[in-house]
Image 1 (cartoon, rainbow, N blue to C red):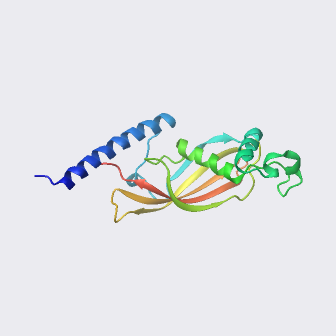
Image 2 (cartoon, rainbow, N blue to C red):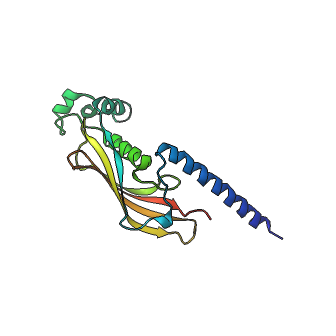
Length: 181
């Protein structure tokens, strides 16, 4: 006879399986059917490249007006006399664009990109008209000993402009599930 713990665990596995299938279907719609990868399908050195995104001046000003209203992000005249010598996107806008590119297929991890921390830098400003894309590489994979259904994957992502110049660097630790049994 099964204990209540075994019945509970079985029910939780069935619910997790349903949620994984549901999430995969939703992400597949958003990403054009791109396969979502589980922990055991990843390897150190594996690389991913996103689609592109064009940074528009109006979007730079709109984002900054709401979230980072500094003069060099919202006013072209003020930006000309700033350290940036022209309109520059907020670093947080640049980070948000990188996240969109990663989620929409640039880093196709099962159950989404669940961050556990990381390090960010902006080596140069993002400008209006920049055509951006993200290149990512798996640098470390650590299966969990206490939670065997998941692991931690360290990913280094760089967002480049159309000239191949890095505008955003992110090294992140992500929670990645194993494929459900």
